[in-house]
Amino acid sequence: MSQESLNKEIISDVSTVCNNSNQHGPIITSCKQPSTSGVFRMQNPNVQVFCEMDSFNGGWLVIQQRVDRTLDFNRSWAEYRDGFGTVGKNDNFWLSLEAVHQVTSRGSCELSVEMKDGSGRYKYARYSQFGVAGEDDKYRLTVDGYLWWEAGRTGDMFSHHNGMKFSTFDGNNDPGDIKCAQRFGGWWFKQCFLW
Image (tube, rainbow, N blue to C red; front, side, top):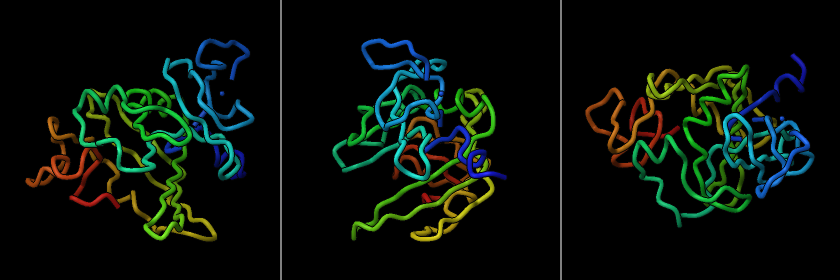
């Protein structure tokens, strides 16, 4: 499989761009369209997105970004469904479960995860298959096909959560009795740890 096809429409960081524009910049259908990183208005779903074009050959739709602790991620089901925060290069935000579902339902998507540890070192994980079901299936996660990077690997941190439904403090769908989302915020929990 070619590098180009591996980088196909993705999340955590997915994407396409039209020549139309509005107050939010060009309208795109995929993050494969822009030539530089930035905020764009995505068409179908109609949502403001940040496209990352500098990492790993670009074309990544950022679905979650936490740059500091100024935004509380312990949010309601409705907030995770609809998205919250300010979409931007240096901002904290969650795109929206519904938008992620719509994008991943269009075709094959890949997931790239980038984390920075307390020492400022970056760690990465990448998966060849990523998808999020619709709200009627509680935005169930599909993630498989762990791929590694040559440097800064985190190890396989998501496959454990494959098949899990999304949980929030007011919408507990994890399999345990602990109610992980009440402690850690919204996520696809199999157990009360994120990776």
